[in-house]
Length: 394
Image (tube, helix red, strand yellow):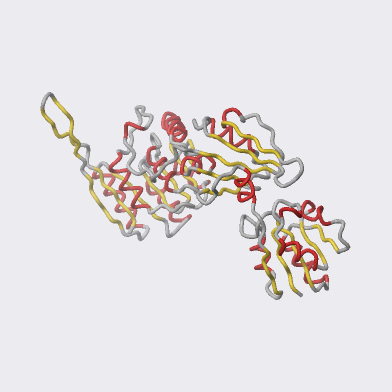
């Protein structure tokens, strides 16, 4: 037996490679979702309508066929079930047959280069829409499930990106193929077909990963804010990965949350604070900087952290007198946590060292004393900020 896992492009024979057509023609049985099988119903073959890998493997093991073709939309290497299926077919010879993926087809229709595209799959799952668009000139969205083109447009508009130009492709490769072009704010009510893709173009994308954003850039209130020099040191020390889950405990204005969020473009930041003003400011700043990957949590951090998903890194900027309980919960969730705490007083520093010692954590302590300049008349004067202790787990 040999199993061909075939990328059939957009779903019609005219979009298939000659190699894919040959594999389908010589197969004894064709397997795939209903939409994949429809163009080939005229052939005198067995058909098995299924898209779940485990069920497909079960059928292949018992069908007794010599040549099997499993049909996958687009290309086997682009957000496809081909990898999972091939891993389950451990005792069977398999071969991948290339197909034409949706971004290749769609951007060729738009006469655009796709080599610099960022790809996001929203097929049956959620993703960081706005953060992706802010970080890249071109972002291609593979839609499906509960996420429609209008949902992306609404989110872009909500985060101040309503003027972004978007392209919506529907039923690509079929007779009723349709391409719609407009600004995000113009298409927030657009009703697209379920078989859709989208391209967002942002000529003003971030050409570098922001770090140490100017304090004046944030929406400010009466809530204390971690200053940019401290913020840059803290975020760099946490070594945040693109897919990480981060906690910002005592988020204040959300300045650290924002800096975390631009680092973990595909991850999530949970910003926790019990002060309603802090919550409001964090929401405002997350929208200002296009960080839809920040989830704001209002309430007592010592209680809320129990409900949050396991973090990869945690910053404690304010504990509300519950530092030991918070750090204990963090260590319980992830014993290998990357953890940083800031302290402005010797008492808080001493408490933090004691708690680190209790949980067997080795502290790496740095004191930063930032001095800035300001003009008074014809003179440049020095203006010192309060010294800050940064306690990082080694």
